Length: 252
Length: 342
Image (cartoon, rainbow over all chains, first blue to last red; front, side):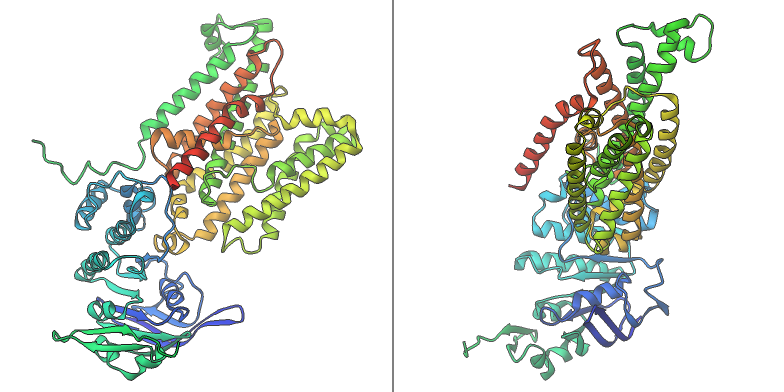
């Protein structure tokens, strides 16, 4: 369980996160949604421990900022793509924390091969990462997170640059992590997809948590409309699945 | 049919045989450099002299080997290793394949220091030239650090302030030269790089500093790969990216400043050699740093051999040889990069 209490983050005068109180359950998928500039990415960095903050974030009782032994995988929205690095080298970097930098075991290399097969990247292991398409790159990032065998994975907009087909492929790959008992926290623009995959949704606006709860509860809550300034409509399909779409703004 | 197992398909990140081969290359090249020249020395006799066996070189030939060619070849090797390694490290730290060791103002700072030494008191200070250029280089990099307060968040701001500091130092250097035109020749011959004044004293002090710097860099080399990712990713993989960047830049600057003060400005080694090694091995990992150091050493020993034999008995400045090979290579790298991004 990750307990976030009175979390605030400032960049100079600007307050990016204000008094956040949330609980993140182990082995569940929690999704942060909200408009641009709501502070979702900063929240992820704070959960990672790389962002200084006031208040408290404890993971299994230990303050995350001081605990460097945690094994947390991070999938950024805009990864830095190392020029000239092959896919297998890139994915193998994920073993660095477990094996120690530069000490990847034979077992780790075998694991990388297995994970490449699982994520559909096998056969591309000798290609340069710079040559991968958006969807393949996203899968390479998730493959790296899988070989890292983390307890927690943080994903920043894992599907934002992908078409629908690749979005589903990547989300299914993320579900592989959940099957392994990994706690997942992701930000996502698409609330419909968030509701399909995540157990819990946290709605953020201007650095605050507006509401949080089970996906079903949040989707049908009137506060969701407030967060998105009444610019969304929620429909329920025959299957019971909710669909959230943007309203056509008639005032313009 | 042999089934492809999981193992084996993913090859190890670095093959240490490459490092062993590059070490052998260095030994071979050093022997080549000490035996060639206007007075050729016999290979067997060189071995006997070096190992103190009977039947070695005597008289002038012995002096030529021990006091001239050997320190010169070793100094070239040390400087070459320092420049190639620093270049590779800067390229990783600044995520810029065209970064070179002189980028943060080290070259211009050293040039200014040397010019001050040469112009202000002539002969007296000329002997202090290495010290002046060493501190000039260190000072310029420190000023670049100081100006770019945002270094920790954005490596490129350090790069830009390095360029600004470098331009300023060069301007001051030009001004001093204009005021004192007799210094033009010695300053320019120093800028083109020279190994002619190699002696054992120089070899010992420069190898001490460079050994310390390279030991630090090779120790952290495995983790340097993490700096190719975003800071959050490298943090999640167990690295403190800010601390690692500072350690790497300080060590690479120490190596560069020492190399510059020992031999003047020798360009292109820091760009050519890392790309050459990466190109041949198809590996960008910093685990190849030791190999880059060894190949850098071999490259400069060979360049120096060319500098003193091509127009024998006259000598070409070594910077001319490295730039002659380096400039076309640099263009190829640029062209290839453009092709990749298209």
